Image 1 (cartoon, rainbow, N blue to C red):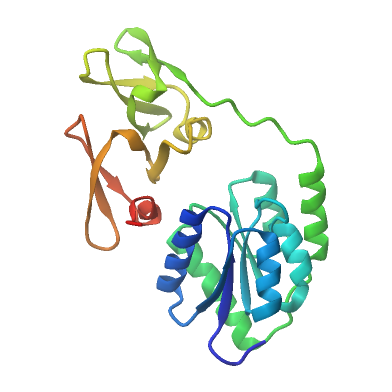
Image 2: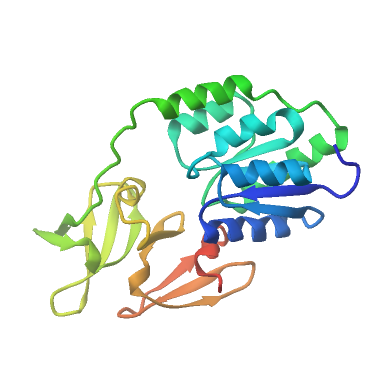
Length: 263
């Protein structure tokens, strides 16, 4: 392991998410040098062999050679941090294997904890954990028939006063957690804004919404990007989001600000 400034490789097939993680690492670990970026597992392994970075951040799901296969090839020659969209089985496996992992979207506090552990490991030059048993278990899981993904929502049945109304998902401006319910802010036929309640929790609705259009901007708020007018940055890496057809101003937490960084 290098005694000089630490180096890292970031492998993620989605360019926006890859750039976001690189920016977050620059803030959380200024001394770290990103020596390579990769779009898939094959590129990750090739660039690791050429540059031998100290740390590899590997997206679990990448086309072709995925993060698990790349970690197998890298072995115990680098500290590996897995990056994954939330997957209950994968997260449980990572926790049981005492492996560093990040869940997308990557939260600043979680990244800070991971950086602290990596810094301690590099400083102590302790042996790198053997990931072989964990990788084998994950590989078997991925080889098993996939559970069908939940269907993308097109309509919601919601309570509006004493009525039950059928609301097209594309007409929703944003969704906000309201105790056991979710409050839906939507545009009616006249174009005027309305609000309604559904019994489904926000986290369950988010899993069924089209990710290209609906993103989480706060632990209690999800917004339809098609309804966004502009975002005003504030202090401490926060922001306020303005909508096209509403006067509502929504909070954007630091953890989700990467959705609105300029290209």
